[in-house]
Length: 194
Length: 190
Image 1 (cartoon, rainbow over the protein chains, first blue to last red):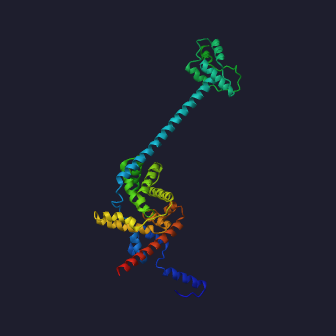
Image 2: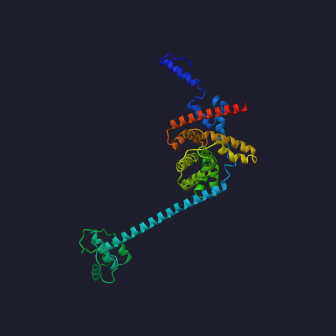
Image 3: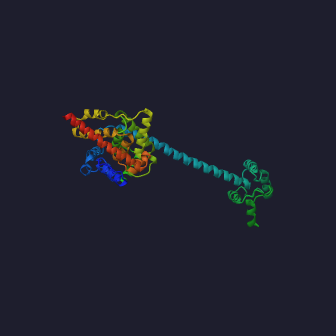
């Protein structure tokens, strides 16, 4: 090693000398190329054996390494199928949940709509009336049904499907007094006849 | 494996098709074994490799990506299982050259050329196993698993620059180990 005179420039030169004199020193590019499989002839002399060593790590699989293929693949297949099943079951369950949810929501909407319109059968109407009254919606009771029937006669079509559907389209005014009778199919049906 | 072929193979494996699982196994198992042998005693490697495959097959139906992504994903599982195994055993790597070589000697007569190459691979793995763990890991993931430094860094949860330093030090140490080995065999020959 050369003696150092102590100045900063000399120190840099000394460090360069040390670096260049280290046969194992590598720059990043050479490290990458060595790891990528650089040919031994192209490698720095101190690393020729290293390149050969690294090459042996990437040779084709040996029979020993593939020995357990049959048993290993069987157990992996079994596991993969077992894992796949719950996934599909989960999807089916989710779909069922969504269908049931939609059906319940639809039924509730229909119940509220028909209840508010007073178009349910007597038993259901009294229940709907009681339930809707709790949430501040005034729905007709079966008694008002009877009044309607009395007014319009048994030939009226208040229970006909068309009437029910049309009645349910009437906007529900939650502040309307109970004695405000909903528009019925009979009322509508009377106009053309008149 | 081309990306298209890989995508078809992976889809088959996700559906539990035996041929597709077999193709994935043949493509990745040998490299998995080599990687694990740089970190564990030979007697533990088969069990750890089985655990890696089971974990991978449990979650590969959620995997999306190409062949390189899959390799990185697979080896991140391998590393994680390996680390768990260390924790369970409460001990460090204990690989010995003899550990790797003994089963080979029994089979050499059957396929001498194959066995000689395998011996060379065993020797390389044994030397890699002598490196400090992170240096060995940084080189094994790069060379054996065939991953670039950025992916190695992601798997090791380190910065790419740190991984490059580990790789450089590992290569340097390998060169010194090989030199020491050569000097010993020359002494023995005298």
